[in-house]
Amino acid sequence: MERFVFLPLVISLLILSFFFKRGSKDLLRASFLIYLLGIFLSIGISLLQASLTYFLWERNSLSHLLLPPFTPISYFLSYVFFHFFRPMLFNLSLSLLILALLKIFNKIFKGRLFFEEEIYFASFAVLASPFPTNLLLIILVFLSGILVSLSKKTCKKRVEFTSLYHFWLPLAILMIIFKPFIITLPILKDLVM
Image (cartoon, rainbow, N blue to C red; front, side, top):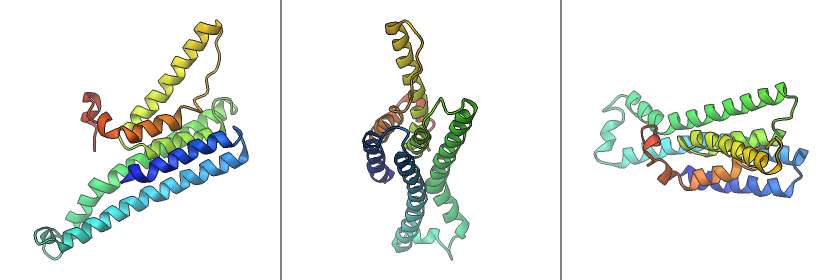
């Protein structure tokens, strides 16, 4: 379900990044608002899934026995936490961690590492990419930056800083679209929640 909600948002943010000048206040505001919307949608989707599960279990002749008064409510709560809220909380926590770390690194290096809106691009990309593809996203973005820097060094014979600005959102789109195939990779298969 998240794929159909977050994919249009990531594409919208990517399009906005081409319409607004890099570093503009309008793009910073838009990226912050889309990130905030992503947080609310993520929580809302988990609540909706939990509500629909309760509704469906209540209507089924067998699964209604898994709800009160036949079974303690703790069974249902642990089920919805494990299946709907745990992945959301992990994605949200990782996203907030990325947000905090990038802001700290940007402050240490006096704003030379990331554009302000890029920090929200990265955080939203991590939030929108479902686990474990968000871990792969982080690795691929930094590897892409390293490869581009190495190719610039090879071609221009000098070291040049490579911004990760245009890597976060396109790679997030790929992670969202190809998640069903990515999670079958042997290295990620054991991580799937």
